[in-house]
Length: 598
Image 1: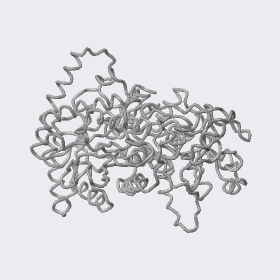
Image 2: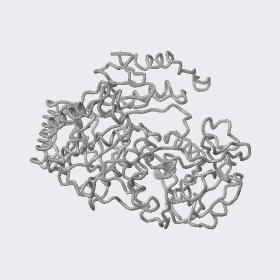
Image 3: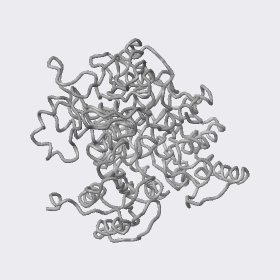
Image 4: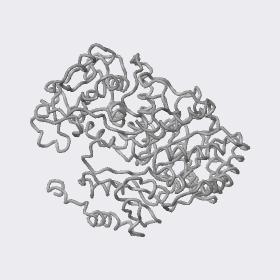
């Protein structure tokens, strides 16, 4: 257990209950309290282009977006927020606007005159990040905090005067050198960075703010939010501020939706989150139905039966560690005991694809459920679990189908009561498809449910094998299984992309560029590539990527190895080729297979 293991972020790990928070008003829209979970998104247009910003905002609102964010890079750009707001009001649209601020306190001051909410990033609002390694004395640390207070208090006072809201939003990878040197690039560092700003706000009796702890790695994101809520609980009941959820740079397509579902969905499942944004490298309107479906799926557990018991968890929710199980060999396939997490399918689905196994590539099934010898139990049945625990031989164990339990709660209860030596087979749903008397869910719902339920457990180190039961199509269920393992960081079988969503700061077309980079590098298994539209989402935000492709200036690209820029001002039309050259220089390149190259 970690040093944080005595903290509690969730009143009951085995039953859904939404976290109680105070209400924060963003214009006329309430967040937290008894309000529904709000869905928001961000404009991709240049904030200087009033007409385009108004047009995109109206499109988002028509799609169901309740809060709209846009960038304000400088004070001069922030001045145009007045015209955007006026243009929207002229169209009868009162949706609250949020100005996204990085590096420029004066831009925040200007923005607060015109929009309902200002987002500040504690890592760069005042601090200038140099990735410097140094030891801070308490006096030096306090001196930098005092400098933050000097720059931040005027914004707090203006927000009080204008009745503006604020998001104190830290990002993994963009923490200040001060925080990095004392706490590291860790969830604790993210929390402490936000609390510095919150203490200043509270000292001036300002409480109209929300927190966020965003990361591109779902494990880091989940741990950071849990730790934040646990720390807020520890500080006292009046620290009950609402929470904004998001996975940064989730990417596009299935991968972006799965990664978002794992991070956002697992926290919603625990009752955390009052407003969410799904960050996809796609047109912003496509984020809204995903966010709405996540809210619905993440809160549906309130209707499921309670696990009814609250044993001490066998995992540490604030520090990832894989559950230590015994290695088994089932039908020649090793499982558990540190082996890779296996993909299982049903006999019916295996038979459906058996004639084309050689054509399934990376999405092959590895075991048949009916041949696995898996023991299915009701985790509330103490006698059945005691019987397993008294046996000398470890068994593959899963939760019985048909139970009126949320899968996350059911498998948590199983993991808490079952001896750690027994490997666990995770299921996305406890009612396999098809069920003739029930309507079939759409694939988006199936995908989000599977990612949320199994991904959350995998991020807690629970699970030695997985099976997707909610998707009837054999090929799709297998692809979904592997993509969930990849997004959870459990089994890397393909290139991993960290791609930021576009915004007004972006210096190139993120969607088309990401697809070009995928086409050139998609065969590099285990290589992590970040595609960032500007320096704000540059070296820090890339966190643990191996290589980075970052907009440096209009039409110019900078390339990174880790967090270090190594190539500068490359013409955009040459940059993808130069990226592949860079990967080759660092001996991470392999030639694509003939079939892919032809």
